[in-house]
Image 1 (cartoon, one colour):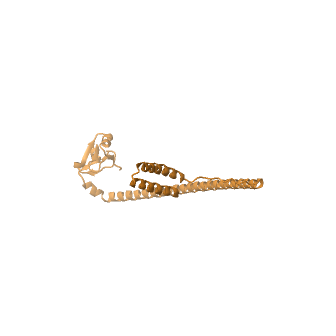
Image 2 (tube, rainbow, N blue to C red; image 1 turned 90 degrees about the vertical axis):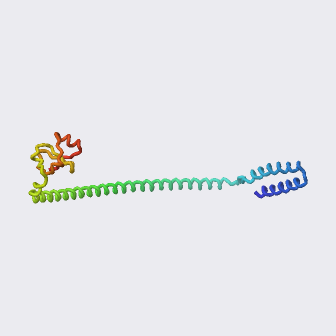
Image 3 (cartoon, rainbow, N blue to C red; image 1 turned 180 degrees about the horizontal axis):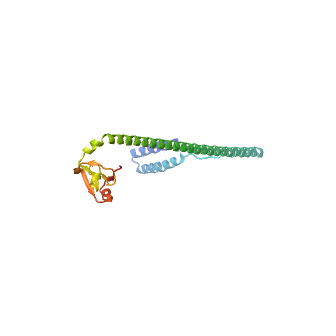
Amino acid sequence: MMFFLIWLLLCAGGGYWAFTHHRKWLVALSAVLFVFGGIGALGSTQPTVTTKTVKVGTQRLSKAQQESRQLAASASRQDKAFALVDSQVATSNSVSESKADSASEATASSQATAKSASKAAAKAAAHQEASSQHTQTSNASHRQGDLDTNKAQKIVGNRNSKIYHTPDQAGYHMNSSNAVYFQTEAQAKAAGYRKALR
């Protein structure tokens, strides 16, 4: 790099002197030298690799080769040990994952069982409450609505609730203004109604 900087200074100084003294041929020569010298100097700034050959005796050579073999064997043993440890880690990870999966499945199944049990209990409580309310308000419900679905002997749907009642089900009192009559259950389902649960 130092050679390149010196070359630049010399070419620039020579070019300036030639230009101020009206020596056109010297200016051209300085420019050519500047360009080719700069390229050459840049190319020479790359480091060169030198190798050193050292002559050693056969004893020293055999000792170095033996040491090299020992290091290679040690590296091989270490690689095998690392592979064994990696496989043990992978095995323990898979075992722990399977245990975690089975534990989470057991937890999920117990939660599902508890949830279904609580739903069943809630449904039973709601059914019990509804039946007790039904018996208490049976006289009042007879007074509500001017249409009894049991007496209609047709499939009657309620426009507000989208529930239909068949003649074989328990009677239901509703306003006749909300009544929709169907010939078949299929017609009622096609219209978006569902069958009454009682």
